[in-house]
Image (cartoon, rainbow, N blue to C red; front, side, top):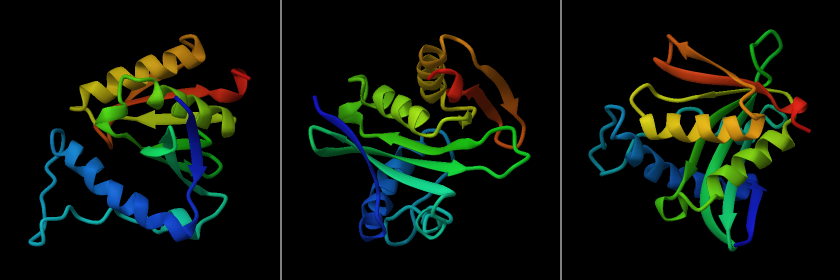
Length: 165
């Protein structure tokens, strides 16, 4: 299985916009998200910023055998924050889950953006919590801290990827 990451150019941003519908569908299990009168989920807030703020926001497509398998949205946070990078969104299509695609992509992003990371999950999304604890635990050999985020209502993991290199 050939895996790759592509920093998505503006000309392909529609791919992530369309995939966001599948991502939001998955979130209907955990959050109260409704379809509009056209049968679509609402637009993801500020998605266009991932192409208007270079150096601060990084949209990626994840590929498996040259087929789109998912996406990741990474934010570079400002100074004074508890982390340098934030895994804003991360999505792998169901058919690629449990095949190592998500683990590979997450580890690649952690390596690519060396520094302090924050990854947050929704409190009701237990599968995501299990995934991230395992992935970050393996990546850091258990050297991460977790705290409950009151504003998100879920856990966040914090770690420094520059120590892993």
